[in-house]
Length: 327
Image (tube, rainbow, N blue to C red; front, side):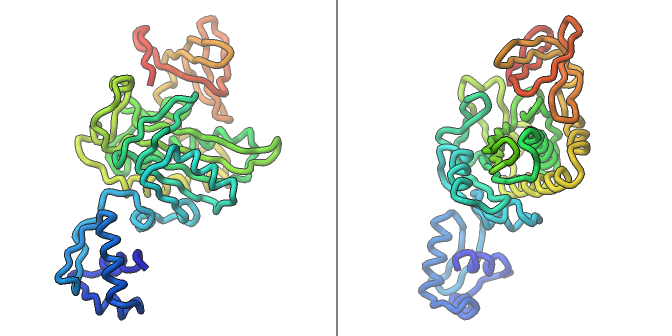
């Protein structure tokens, strides 16, 4: 009912009376007033005259599900959104939801994460109300060995959305970091539960530094935000919706036509390819040049002896003039 009142206020070109709202929705004027009060507490600026007439003045900068859904053109992705003012990690919460049964394309969003998760057990700086910290839950009909392609697909989707909404073209550092001028804008963490031949679910965590202006000392030199890059405040609601819209388009194309087009789009944004890199895997450290990604999304690196390595998983650093840039 609260959301229905909000939609009426959004559609109105002026003030709506409590009587008009109550008649339209079949509730009492007292109920209308209570819902209006709840909306105000959530940050909506609503002008009210003696509790009899109301007008929506401003929508808050919060990633509320109804605000995001207003900008979605998806069929499945983001049609169910769980919103939390604070979570330990959206991936952790998404796993808990997935274990109980989920609707394909469910999204978990937190205004902040107290224990945000990055790759290789690193933390992720996730302050309140500045970024987009969200996780998708999907169950694609693909082999578990193909799940890594979802990470590259997500990087492409985020890069496309950033270009659309912010006018910036970020680079992608294999497999999943979005960079601008060598500094990290976005990280992606994909986690999966599967048997040998069947995926139970994939959790796709996306963290985007949107309107951050300050970072902890340990990442100050390697992280940036869209606000810092673009020189202006970014609408987080529209950007979150744009990521989900792009993600569904790419996801459906991937399921129907395979990885080829996603691979081509990934390479359009790639900053690794053709560059000297250092790759840290669990088994070894490889120094060489990143040549390409193969049809499975693996990074092909030619070492200093000319041997070509297929990198399934690892930490990749760009090397510029012998100095490694760990993003």
